[in-house]
Length: 130
Image (cartoon, rainbow, N blue to C red; front, top):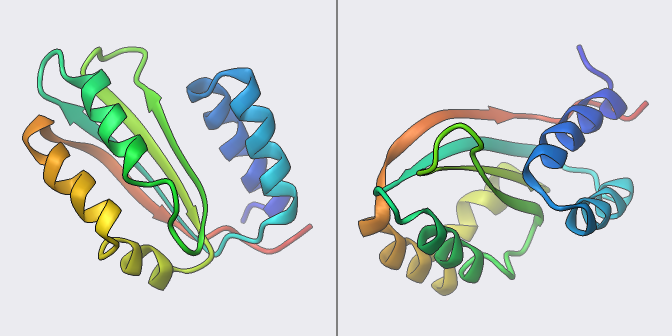
């Protein structure tokens, strides 16, 4: 079982692949103080040529979600229509509640036509502090 430090290091490595340096530094700062209890990693496939538009919609609608510690969107380097989303939450319940927020509902409504499908998805629970 990974320690919290090892788990966060793995997430940081994934974030490093997805994020530009200034955003990565901001995430590292947040993670030093946060204690996430629930996480999701998933791949979303945009309609051909619609990846940037989908990212813009998802970025708009997810700015203020109670209980959210991090919401990262990154472009898949091997597939020009795919994105990866990494989410860290204080609880699974906070994530579920976020899906009912007006801004998130609007992002879902606007983004749905741009989504071609979904790839790999994993839920995880960060493990204890080290």
